[in-house]
Length: 423
Image (cartoon, rainbow, N blue to C red):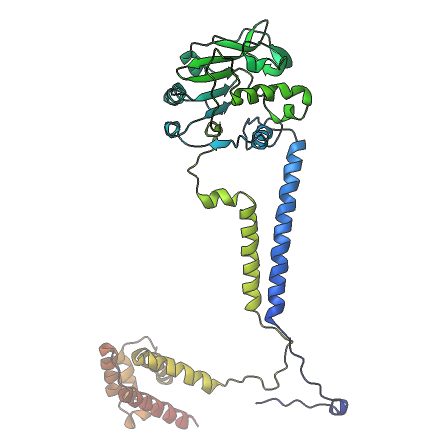
């Protein structure tokens, strides 16, 4: 039954106000998106700048003498210095067999893993053609000494340990004339070649001519690190390398200027084979992209929501038993499921008849038919023919509508006769 709302007298006098709807404008949404994008860029920039400054203060867990490292042990300061001096250095992340296509100077500093023998041979073959090599390492591992051995330089480890101590510069070349000393940390000496800087235990930095090229070997891998460049007392370390790059050699030696300086980052685990998306996702681009995706998700769900206040519906939806029955019957009809419907209805009929005759509903059809024949209701309907027709239709699994209605009508006739007799 439909409910009616009875308003009180006070509600009748109250003035009806128009319903207030939510005024949604697309322009408001776009302004919000622009604001979120701007905030994301500012937050990424601020967090990146904070991390960069914070890393300069926190002690390093591991030493990585790389141009990518901006902390104390890194070479980012040297890389920036050479850029300002106009050398325009580059980073090398490719296999060494590709060096043959380039001319210049390769700078290798403290490899994370020692170079393989064939890699050393490829580098030295490239140097022999007229290129230069700067190789800084502590030479503690036996494999790391393969390169010095190819240049006829031996590594001596039973020597005095140097910890950021000054050693004199051996002025064997004119381009060293303006240098007195360099500050190094070293635990080995290099015997062979022409000494550039040494102490009483032997050379720490030496130079070797290899074919048409030159090689500088140093057992002080940290002599060009960021923690030294900040103090003017240590600038001789960088001036020595700058003089080398400028090619200020004596008239007796070959005088050439290297075209390009390559800092080897392959020895620190950096390669040129990374996916561009994986590489960019590690930087600010990846952080901004993730925030933009989050904004897009928020916008999508916001657009999918319904805005506005709740509205009272006076007429509630009603459903009766007949509506449910009609809907269920329609579903069975569309599925052409007359046989299951007939089985359900006839089972209910059989239970009622069995109860009326005092017979179990699980007995065979013969027992039910015999009990029916002894009943006073048998003169109106022949139950035996009804059961036979039902079994035939169920076995065929194809029950026409007319046949099903005929059997149901017969069942209803028996049920009605029973109810009249009971009265």
